[in-house]
Amino acid sequence: MNFNVLKYVIEVERSRSITAAARQLFISQPNLSRDIKELEEEIGFSIFTRSSRGVVPTEKGREFLQLARKAVRQYQTLEHFCTREEKDSLRLKVCVPRCGCPGSVLASFLARQGKGRRLEVDFWETDAARAVEQVLLRSSSCALIHCPDRWEKSLLALLKRKELACEVLSRFDLNLLMAERHPLAGASQLTADMLEGLPEVVCEDTSLAALLHENPDAEHGESCVRIHQRAVLLELLEKLPGSFALAPPVSESCLSRYRLVQKKLQGPSRKMAGLLIYPEDYRLTRTERSFIEMLSGKASESQ
Image (cartoon, rainbow, N blue to C red; front, side):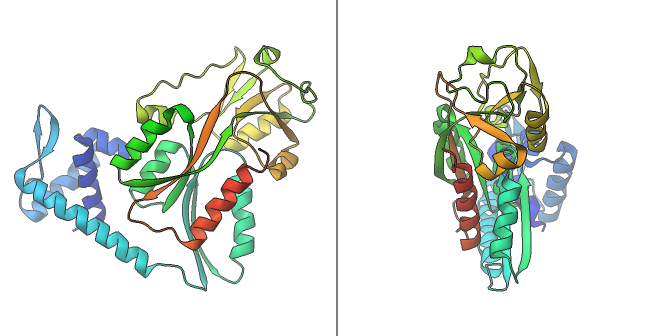
């Protein structure tokens, strides 16, 4: 019996839809249907049936899913016990937002903590929705995600339903990022009307809005460059004349490296929360906790 397929059928039960579950699991719907069929053939009975309410468990399927959830939790607890930190190794499986210079923080952390130790590191820069799914599937032990204050209550409710723990590590306002030689870099106060006509570089994470069925409700100027890679954002701000971006606070080392400045924007507050998420039945290792705290601390140096 394939352990991953047990996680798949648990997600199908949660989603009440094979198509929706496939989307959440980031696998194709035909492959998911095939895996479920092969599992049902292996155990000798149907786990799900289709109805007006979507895909629902059969009577025997409900019993199977209850046992499957227990088996998955026990296996993950055993896996964590068997792979817990040793003095001669450093293990880290973490997702982080696409902002700032997380790679620089990782390099500094490994140089400090990993000397003379065997490294087993999986590091993802990804959007919030993908980070949630990575943690749900235990592909990542934990994730740091950024969430607008106005969505925090909805997100916490969603995480609770998915049996994920959540800690608020920081709260911050989005800042203006621009090159040191930007014509507005020396201004003591900046307002939205001063930015009119200038190119805005947008690297926003819309995945959380989709996950929560919310309207992104973002307004951008007429001159706009939309990108999906953090490195491109920093390069554009450095080299595209007059460009600016709204972004979480960036460390002094990152600002210096790309010759950028960050400024407060006058007007409505753009509050965000930095959230650490991990499975409810998982205990963060010292290494994971230390790295997340270092990353969060780096992100707030300039606040």
